[in-house]
Length: 116
Image (cartoon, rainbow, N blue to C red; front, side):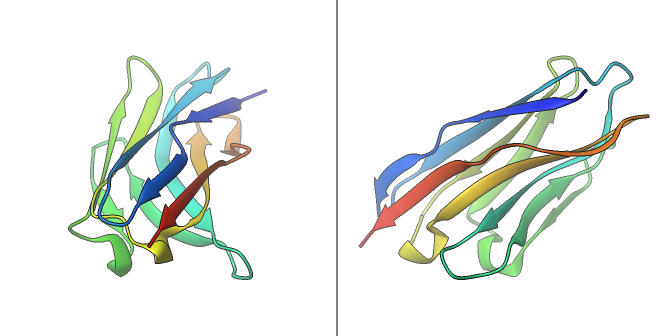
């Protein structure tokens, strides 16, 4: 069973930065796409950023130029560096991986709160 453990969320003032990290356990054959999604209060879950095995990246328009996704295949981790945060970024951030053989897996989420 693949398990994801996220860390790095917290409370930050507008304009501040946070770095989220996600460690993948149990993906014995590696991972394909890795990424981050978020769910803001009262809203549907939305894609934030994804990164392929070849390091191709994809970002939501709302975070382009502010967030950077990266991965370390040797350590089975995916990170999200978030800068210039604003209150609209407040959400529960979930790590996502498409594990080889096992398929999609989600983390429990780490909360990010941005105060104005």
